[in-house]
Amino acid sequence: MAKIGFIGLGIMGKPMSRNLMKAGHELVVFDIRPEPMAELASEGAARGLSPRDVAARTDMVITMLPDGPEVEQVILGPEGVLEAARPGLIVVDMSSISPVVARKVGAECSKRGVEFLDAPVSGGEPGAINATLAIMVGGEATTFQKMLPIFQAMGKTITLTGPVGAGNITKLANQIMVAVNIAAVGEALALAAKAGVDPEVVFNAVKGGLAGSAVLNAKAPMILSRNFKPGFRIRLHYKDLRNALNAAESLSVPLPVTSLVQQMLAALINEGEGDLDHSGIVRFTERLAKVEIKAQA
Image 1 (cartoon, rainbow, N blue to C red):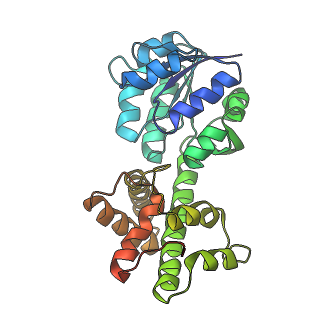
Image 2 (cartoon, rainbow, N blue to C red):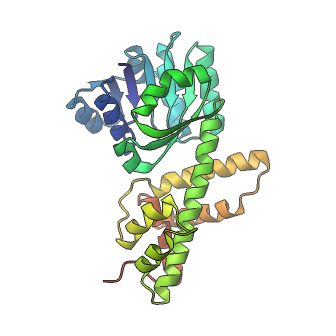
Image 3 (cartoon, rainbow, N blue to C red):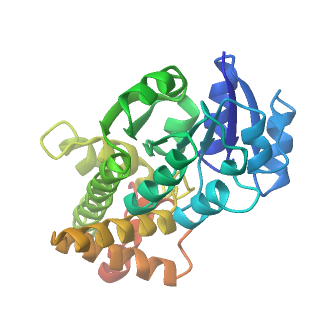
């Protein structure tokens, strides 16, 4: 069993940490908020004093943070992970960040003799709780093999996608598909609702055909029951699409549909809805159509 440091105990990080403990691993955890640290400490984790302290006490450090600036601060900054750098230490960032930042952090780790993987995930809070995440990994194959048993305690589909940065490119591709799919579900069900057809009946009619998808099956029931409790927040999906568009611009790849959905997300954030689940993308179309998508009693 491994001695693992886990930094970032939010919606995703806390249940991921729990699954590592359930698998028998010894954890040292850290978060800027004391409450999740206390919660996990009551379940058997040790509390870290700082990212540096976490790294000094463990063999591998996993970070699960909101965005690139936080990753850079935690790993490269003062009292950061690399202040406890030593040969053999492995750092795995499972945040969804810009591949440019992932490569920068990986290069700094390499200079200090530290192995690094970028390994963003998909599956939201349910996947984190149930250890069924899809994990998209970038880095050296030898490091990937060392971490594979750890990943298997948190996820179901684990794929080495290429060198450092490839994990986040893959995650950005995933986020484009998910956001555009949710937007399409919203438009389709808004049309049905406005026409007087029960959108729940439409969902059940199409889910077994070509229009069916994991996104439809996961998000349509939430929409129909008006449950927008966040498994993955709108503001975080906006961040991911921003990173996707920045990467696309650097590669001269046009992403017109992604750009449109990002503007929908921006409008929802401006309406104070950035902390809703990303299934709430449908609320943008609902307002334009003056209709609410819900199951008919």
